[in-house]
Image 1 (cartoon, rainbow, N blue to C red):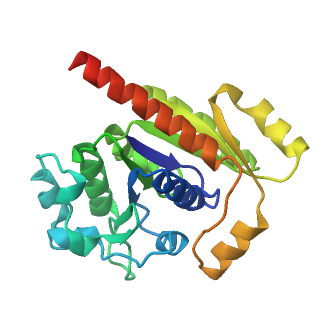
Image 2: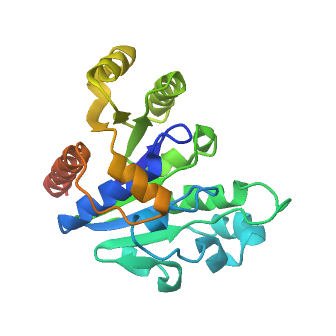
Amino acid sequence: MKILVCGKGGCGKSTVVALLAKEMALRKNKILVIDSDESNIGLHSRLGMEKPEDFMNYFGGKKLLFEKTKEMKNKWRLGDLPGDYLTRKGNIQLLSMGKIYEFGEGCACPINALSSKFLEIVDLGDEEFLIADTDAGIEHFGRGIETGVDILFVIIDPSQESILLAKKISELGRQVDKPVYYILNRIADQETKEFLLNSIDREKVIAIIPENKEIFISALAGNEFNMDVEGIKEIADMLESKKKAEVKATKRNG
């Protein structure tokens, strides 16, 4: 199952990706975390891992990516991924598509083309999950990155911008025929919680994560997340339930 985590800048996408990956890995699942945000450089630290070399370099670098991605047609299994471009910890593997490093080097479009194609052709086994961290906003919908995933998670923090963006992403999800679920993040009190629930389609909400000072301090210091966080287990339960139903249906129809 392939999950794409999106939302506005600063809403907590990378935090949720890291916490969810670690929870799913504890349950003996094999997790591939995809860092497809060309501007975020801290996801690996939240996972307690070294930063991997950019996957774009496997194809000869950014300038060659457009042509190389056109040649990617065969399915890739997790065991096919080049080890030199992965970092591993337990049941988690981290793959970083690429970053912007130099002034004037050009846009991230080739990197995003690689992300889109890779998500489309990667083939997962019964106990394997892919969790992709995206860049802020909705530009990735314009690039078609959502085509290759199964589920969209929208992280909503207590802001009007987050509410409006969640509604837009839900609309875009319908256009690409992908289910959209909401995760409320950094909820400090009951009043904030109720305001958000009354502002969105509450039936799409699968978890509510409270404001957490331990997470804040760990992220500020660049430390690994090693804490139980309310709401994360519920998300993992939901994913495993959907995966079991998917596998059962496949075997029945196969």
